[in-house]
Length: 334
Ligand code: KG4
Ligand code: ZN
Image 1 (tube, rainbow, N blue to C red):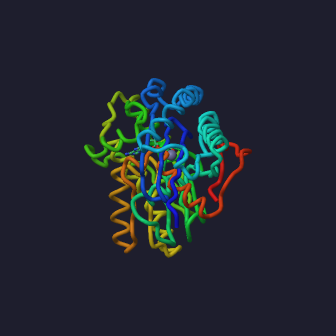
Image 2: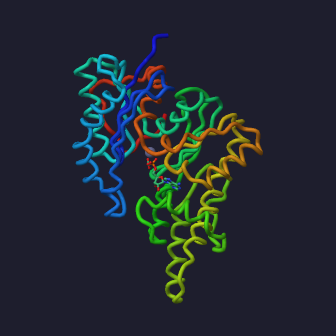
Image 3: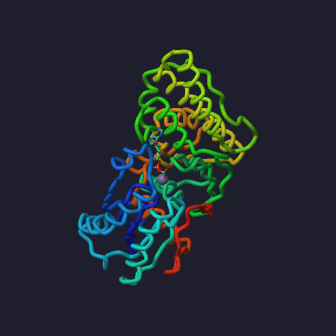
C-alpha cells in the first residue's frame, strides 16, 4: 500500500493545532498554539476569545507545520479535521480552514470526532488490540467506549453530569489553584494524606459516572471549615479528592473488563496525564492480565497529531465528507 500522509487540524477548545501523520502511526510534524495563558486570567476558557485567537493563529500554525515537515500541500493525501464536539465558534475556524484546503487542493476531507482523536493518540505508540476499552477522561468528557474493531465505537457509559476534568478544575479553584487546575491538584495530592471523607459517587450497576455530587461535597467541606474559622488542609483535600475520583473510574473499568472480555485498555484525554489514575490503572490491568496503553503526556492533551492519526483509520473505514460538513458542539461517537 502506498504511504498516506494526512494533515490533521484541531481547534475544538483553546488549542490551535496542525499535524502531519504518516499511515496513522508515525508523527512527521506537529505545531500547537495554546491559549492557556490568555484564559488563565478568567479562570476558564472564554469561548468568544478562544475563537478570535483561532482565527489569528490558524494560518500561521498550518504554514509552520508544513515548513517543519518540509512538505507542500501536494505531498498531502488527505485532510482530517475535528468537526465536534467542542466550542462551536472554535470548531468552525479549524473546519473552515480544512474545507478551504480540501477544496483548493482537491484533497479528501475526513471528519474526525474529537474523542476518536483522543483514542487514536494511542496508535502513535502501539497498535490497538480488540476487544478494547477506551477510558476517555478530559475536561469535557468522561466516557467508557468499547471497540470490537477499528473505528467501531460503542459507548457503554458516561458521566451523568460534570466531566472529571471539569470537576478537577473546580476543586482546584476551591483550593485556590489557577486554571487549568487539574495538573496542580494532581501534583499537590502527592504531598497530602487521605484524611477528608468524601462520598464515592454512583456505586451502581451501570457504567456511568457522576461528579457533581463530589464537586459539591468538596465545596461544602471548604465552606464549613471556613465558617468554623479553620483553614482547609489543601494537600490533604487534594489527596482525598483524587483518591475518590480515581476510584470511581477504576471500579467501573474493572466491571467492564470482566463483562466485555477486554484485552486492551487505553486511557485517553487530558486527565490521562493524572498520576493517581495512571498508577491505579496500571495496578488494575496487571492484576487482571489485560494490556494497558496510555499515550505520552504530549498526546494526552488536545493536539492535531491524534486527529491526523484517527483520520487515517476513519478514511480506511470510508468516512469522507463533502464541503457541506458542519461543526457540531455535541455529537455521539459512532
Ligand atoms: O483533553 P483536554 O486537553 O481538553 C478537553 O478536551 O477537555 O483535557 C483538559 C482537562 C482539564 O480539565 C485539565 O485540568 C485536565 O484535563 N488535566 C488533568 C491533568 N492534566 C490535565 N486533570 C487531572 N490531573 C492531571 N494531571
Ligand atoms: Zn480533548
